[in-house]
Image 1 (spheres, one colour):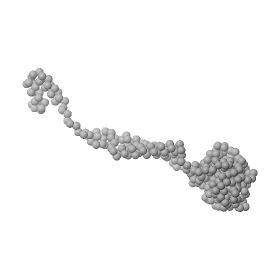
Image 2 (image 1 turned 120 degrees about the vertical axis):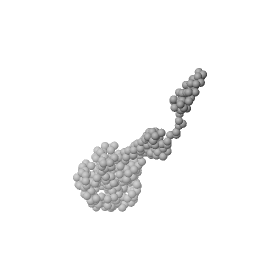
Image 3 (image 1 turned 60 degrees about the vertical axis):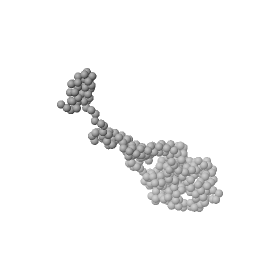
Image 4 (image 1 turned 90 degrees about the horizontal axis):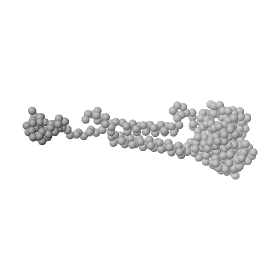
Length: 319
């Protein structure tokens, strides 16, 4: 059999079979991973981020606000580079540093009538950027606070549970959400036509405690009036604007990877490859010899010995 004929025969070598099986298994795992992630996604995201579904994230607060009628947006650029409306509530949680330009932009935003909710992170570094004579965040830890005073931020709030971080103390720390050892979780300031709500510990707003005591009510009160837009600053958590291929969601990349693996497996299974040579078969008698032998058999039965001898001689190549 010629080489071209062998090449036309479909076949899969042992090594190619293992490659196909391995690619198929990887594709199956990718598909299963996508399905399981869609059904029961793994908690992820940085602390105090509205994207985060971890215990320390605030994704549940963002969802609560949306269900209560507040338009929710995420800011993925520096505050100094955007134009916020005086009707907005800006949420800055867990910032470790606040550039001077952002601090000035926040001051202008609040003075024009905006609302700021700032808490957690490095308060000693961020508070001086937006507040004059800020309260000290070196107060005793508070796990259970009681509301005092008739403020809009505390409407319907009696007790608040916290994770036990520090509290505000000093001349600028009024006893609004106080614990047994003093200090306050909340400090409220006014600036121009706007308002600043400062939290020494943002844990009452986080996923882990939002459903405890009156924490959810506090979260709604801090957003401001009904239907007031709330903007979460996510640039401080490392989220930047996505462009081009980077804008594709992670699940899309996983799906594309699974499809690519499935395509490779299909190509390997359908490809034609050179396999081992076919075994040689014994040469069959040519049809002419079979015909002569059949005629000889007929003549033998008829009794014509001379003609029979002549046919046998020709069949054997004689003359």
